[in-house]
Image 1 (tube, rainbow over the protein chains, first blue to last red):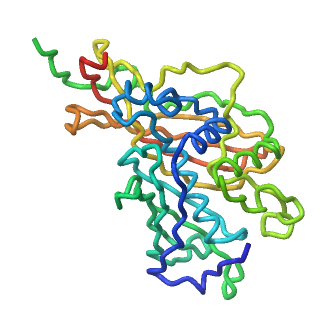
Image 2: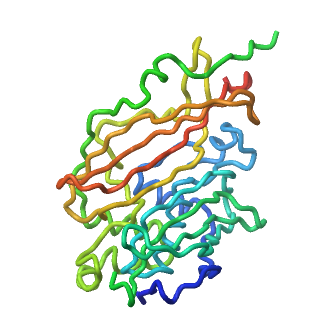
Length: 146
Length: 171
C-alpha cells in the first residue's frame, strides 16, 4: 500500500469516499468476529420490538470499523491511527449505503510526531451524517524523519 | 396516573463507583487467524490490507510484522457468557432504564500483534444528567484501558452510555 507522507497532505483534502451497503451479510460477519449477536442486529422482528419500525439495524461498532478502515486505506501501512472517536447520532438501516466522509482539517507536530486531524463521519444515502467525529493520524515524513 | 418523573437517575452505587478501577481482565493470546478474520469481516467484500494478514509484506513496513486493526477486540468470545439482555438497567427506586450507545473516543498506543496478551481495566469516570429528547437522561462515561503483556499502553476507550426511563409500553 502506497505511503502517504505528511508533506503531501493539504488541509482541506478530502479522503476518497469509502462505501459499503448495509445488510445481514455484513452484520453477520461482524457479529461472528466481535461476538455481537445482539437480537436487534440479528432479526427484523427483534428490531421492531426494540422500537425500529424498519426491523433489524446495523452495529455502531461496524461503522466505527469502517471509519478506521477508510483511514488505513487512505493513509497507508506506515501510518498510525492515534485517535478515533464519534458520536452515534442515527442508527443505520438494512440496505443503507454507508459512506465514510472525511476531511483533513489540521496538520500539527504532536509529541514530535507529524499528525493530521481529520473530521470524519459515516453518511447514509439520504445525505445524513450518522456518527460525526474526528481522528488523529500520524503520517511518515520525509523532512521530519518520522 | 402517569408515573412520577424521577428526580435523578444516578444511584448511590453508581455515584460511589466513579473513579474505582476494576480488577484486570485478561484476554487469551491473540491469534493470527483472529486478526485476519476481523479484517476480512470489516473490509468485506473488498480484500483487506496485507498489513493485517501477510507476514512477508507486513515485515517490510514500520511495524515489522502483522498488526491488528485498531478496533480489533481480543475479548470477544469469552467462555463465561454475558447476558444477552443488553441495554436494560435500573435507576433509583428500581425504575427501569433503557440505553443507547452515545459514542466513543479511542486513543491508541502500541498496536496489537499475534501472540499479544491484552489486559483490560474499566472505570466509570464521569456521570451527568440533563433533560433531553426522552425526558431526564443520564450520560455515563466509562474508560476501558488496555495494556499488553509488557505493560505497554494499547488503547483507552471512553464510551458514553445514555440511559433514560423506559416508556410504559416498553416495560
